[in-house]
Length: 325
Image 1 (cartoon, rainbow, N blue to C red):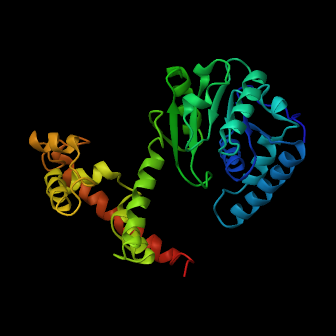
Image 2: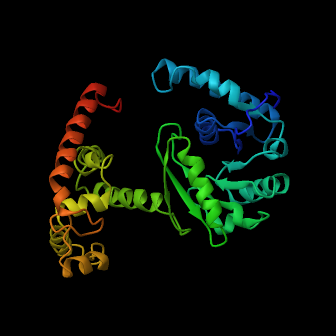
Image 3: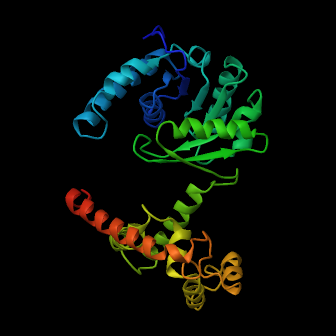
């Protein structure tokens, strides 16, 4: 399939290098958002095969009510399979690298991308584990390079991690966020540290869960049940700081002290929490905490929380249990 469709004057030109499961899903997101998107892979044949797979997949998503009516037609109009990386990126405003998490492969791919792309094209990597500064080494004009980390499955997970390295320009960060927001997703900008934020949180939870199972304290099934039916039930609506503010930071401080009787180092009280409690900033009940929600909004917040939890319960009842057992 060649890039011969006449584009509207303002249609953004994107390229996704790596057309597998993650890259293909990102390409769907960008194309459904209205951009013209080139797919590239190690060969023209693989890119073309994955292009066709994405159309078939889209038909199924439409049938299942996961994509809007007309989505496949939009993808046919906006998505195309390039002969190679150089053709895909030649006219792109934004390029997303989504090749395997192997530094040598990413370096070789990013070198080809940056050599063939326009000097002002923004280049993002979908890495979830590799330092953005290290990935930037082969990139010409590294100020236009950053991490743009979509989560799996990318068409349906609404959050995207934006990770600048020390040389990334503020204009690049702003443009990348605008690009992601144009697809209806949300962004969070985080620093270029090991694990970034998403995986540090995700693997911290898994590490504690695995230890509970290893020590015979609970089965894997029971741990999963507790997570999804208690604090995990809140997480679609409130992050950990909002939850802490609503519970009361003095309560959190007390719970840390209790946990320290068994695990003094693992559950040492975070200094940021101690400082807030010592200052009398105890969360929503005092109008100041991590998020500084005014006390007069407490009733409104509680009403939203209750409505959200009832709606989530109804959704789960409608969907039924996950087909695990």
